[in-house]
Amino acid sequence: MLNKRLLIVLVISLSIGLSFGQSLKTHKHITKDSVYLNYINPFYAPLELTLSPLDSTKSFVKVNPYAVLKHRDTLKNALVIPLNRVKDTSIIDSKLYINFKGNFGNPNSIVNETYRYTLPYPKGKKYKIIQTFGGKFSHNKPHSRYAVDFGMKVGDTITAARDGIVFFIKEDSNEYCKTRKCVDKGNKVLILHKDGTMMHYVHLDFEGAIVNVGDKVKVGQPIAISGMTGFTTTPHLHLVMYKSGGISIPFYFKGQKRKKLKQGKYYKRKN
Image (tube, rainbow, N blue to C red; front, top):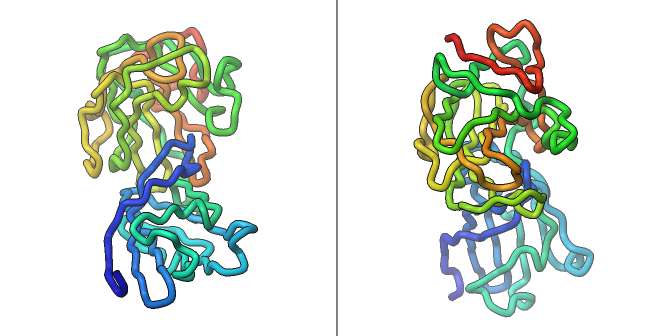
């Protein structure tokens, strides 16, 4: 196996936004005395990585501690392990050697705070706001404070609120419950905008995405079908925008006199 180059997929639990599991591509290179791992970002969104050795391994591993990787960029020599410290070179679990943190987004991006979004459903449709910014039920954490819930029925069409590129889709769940234990069961489409912000469309139907990863979408374009998956008590679309670091940030819609949509009020998309 010495000097053999392999391209493998390493599944690591990343704290990206809402801490859902992701896959990084990892290039492994073995020499006569060490194993070298390079991390490759396969996502269309930037990925901020922070690595540090465990207390138990800091005396012998070498770590490349930080990088912001664009799509297909590589963090070279992310982890270097002496060969005599690896029992099985065919399967290397990085979590046995390092602390790993990853976030979608580039911390150097500048948010366009003047942009006004389009309501996320077809022109002429109207929906009730069942929870808005700072809602007491579930919009009271840093990752959800600036979220809006639209009371859509299962099967309704969701459209893009802004131009962007689809960088993540989850649509394999048909589960929901009324507690946070189901938070990872919510189907979603994630879209990256040109200013680096990322919109999450959540609680979609099983196999409810009608776009693919890598698709460039236009504002108003149908992207998904509403459902009832994840942490929810009623069918709805959970719409939230993030900047780097998994922190939700305010966003506002075209043509609204009030910047913050009012809970209990219906809003019709006019254009």
